[in-house]
Image (cartoon, rainbow, N blue to C red; front, side):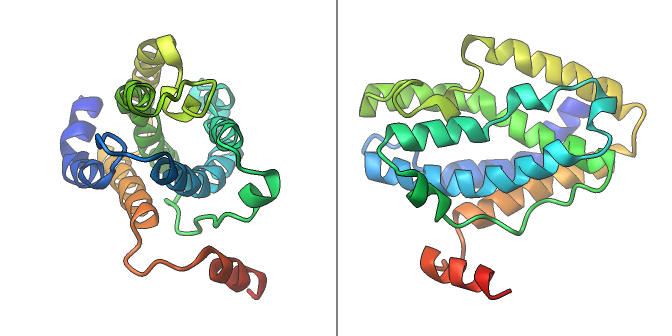
Length: 205
C-alpha cells in the first residue's frame, strides 16, 4: 500500500516537475542537456552525501553505495568536455530535504530511486536525438541499465518492509513531496543566482 500511496500523493508535484523538464523535447540541444546535468550534479552531490552519512542506513538492509548517482553525473560531464575545475566551480544546492528520521530517508529514497525508471525513456531519447550513449554522456539517466527494473523491485520490497516498522506513512509521503519540491526549486529557481555570485556568497558565509 505504501507504494500506491506515495504514487498518488506525490503525483501533483511529480507531474509539475516533469512537465517543465525539456529532456524529452524533440529540439533538445546538447548545450541545454549539459546545463541540466550541471543542475542535477548540484543537487545530487550534496544530497547523496547526506544519504550516505545517515546513521541508520545500514539498518534498512539497503546498500545505497552501489546505487550512488553522483559518479555517473561526473562521468557524463567529463565525457561532454567539462574540466574538473569547471565541475568543481558549479553551484551546489543547500536547500535539501530534511533527513533526520528513517521516515524522511525512505521518502527521499522513493523519489531518487523512482527517477531511474523515467530515466530509461530519457536515455533512449538522448541516443536518438543527440547520439549520446551511457558511455558518451548519458550514464546518469541510464541508471542501472537492464537491471533498473530489478533494482526498483528490490527497493520497493525494502520500502514495504521498512514502512511497517518505521514512522507513519504520512512522514514518508511528506519527505517524498519535500524532495520533489526542493529539486524543482533547484532546477527552476524563481530568481536564478549566477554561479559566480553563488560561490562568492558561499565563501563569505
